[in-house]
Image (cartoon, rainbow, N blue to C red; front, side, top):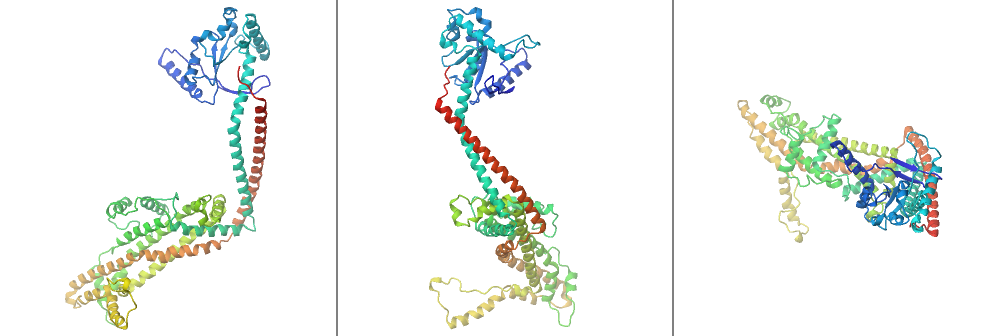
Length: 608
């Protein structure tokens, strides 16, 4: 039972009345109850902040079982007070010869144990008290003192007799306990005041920043800082929490697009993979991607992404078999002679463009999703700079703007909305540019397959490099022109091997089918070798270079302005509450400090 007592007629205190220990139980159910009572009581008795009032009958001290329980948890009796109740029952047993030794427990009570002997008011159960309780308490206290004085009890022991002496001791005890706890309380209050001051300052700053004449500028400034911070995150920042392994990344990516019903790209690189888990196992065990299980974000995560999408692209194959009918149909007639070269181009455009295009769309969606996931990392980076040694290396506005973004839902919504729109725009441009490149490639694959010219001979020592002579230049040019032929010269030889006679159509079909597969393989290899270059050129660099400009062009709609005004109205009431809290906290600190000084000046003795 929890009891809080506040009255001019007693000591103000809070008491938890615990059930008495059961030393004997007849059956299992009562034994279980006894165990529960003991666990409940000891849970409170172990708390060193609690003072134990051990109430025992005023009988033989050697039989006090509850006191023994207290002693097991408080061996020095530092927080145990013994109250020997029903003193009036033992008046007749006390004489001038034994009263002093009885108060001492006949040697069974330790000297350092604070103890009192009292008689408390009682009346017949079910009846009303015959007198007011305070009057009955006063009479019982006077009778206890009178009886002990008649038996010649020493004056030093008289301070342990009667309820009034017990009450006076508890009043001083509680006062001293309160004084001893004032230090931690004051520390907590001062910490609370510091927190309230920071909150009030933050609210005032936010109110100023959301001024109708400044809000658009504030939003744009936060956006520009966010865009600049993205560059730092992409360069690599340590200890950012928003990280993920490649497995987590791919699972979240698939879950996201399955939730929105995406079907415009291939989710798996090949039909041979029955599920995402098969693809993950392939990346982990067969490819042994070094950073597969490493939790990354920013530029390191982007580099790993590039490795994964290149592997994904290399699985691209022509999805249908080139049939004899398709080869014959593709070789129609025109005003000029149709060559097998033209047939191969038609078949590639018809059968090979779409599989590669769907995988390129996957690459774009992966990059877009990657950038969208960096918002949390960028915001954490901006917010974590304050008070760190590395803060001087970056803009001092980052922590301030991060706090505004976190606290102001409208600013965060506008920034993230603009950021996501930039990601979507770059995805569209990436897919469009890549698709144009693929279209031109399949329209004339022979030009695309020309190799790059070499800039120097293999094994040339750079330490001896010098400007080439005119003769060296004349010697180099034919080699470069010959080298540019590359795969084209090989394919041209295969084209000349295809018979044109109608009687050899079966052999021609077989060779055309083989040539289509080989040509597609060359194109796929070239595209995969350059996918990182395309991603950098068509997506990452435009995204990072134009994001600041996008943020600087944020505009507020009428709805946004109305939302900001509502937010300012809420800030006014929050600032008022913060100021009121500060006043209350200061008042509490002043009162407690004054009380502590008064108590320390006069002292509060606790001895009985």
